Length: 254
Ligand code: 1GP
Image (cartoon, rainbow, N blue to C red; front, side):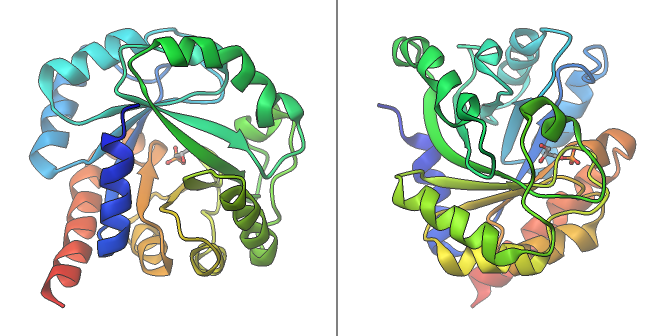
């Protein structure tokens, strides 16, 4: 079984080093200007691309991944909404169990359907506890997944959920306020999860400024994921990359 990305995340976590992931929503990627965006990502040191979303209407993940592989060495990690979103040409897949919800299909059902395909593929499988956090308004992921997010102001619920996920053997935790969230996951909640589990923590949803990214990193996020913010303001990509780099330089200097 492949473990390159898992090992990298684990090593970074142990060294206190942070990573920056850019979320590419296949419905929104403009293929004509995509090579430029990829060149910028290489130039500024993006660590990962997450490809996917809870609802996809344009099945272009294969083209997006082919372009990533052609223009960069940055890993393309699938962020699937369901088993239809598996694209074997990616490098890895977040094998998400939606542990904040009580929808059995997203806790185990889709996984059963996907398992034979994943076993046969060359994808690195990253078992991930996915926790949806209430963000100020209803998000697509909450609606599509038919689950209730964890209340924004209940860090202890998130901490216990993450603990259960870790005890079940999940190797990454993803705290997500949902794409385009009004409010990102609070630093208090990230810190509570950080104290409770010994796994890398991915945080995304509504991170649309350097200040919000820094707050997440300082609270204990290991990977920050940004989609909407960069779609709306491409200058954010170098700014966020710089913020993550500055954080890592501080760690190296200690
Ligand atoms: C959503 O975590 C991702 O699942 C990223 O969210 O698009 O709000 O950055 P944004």
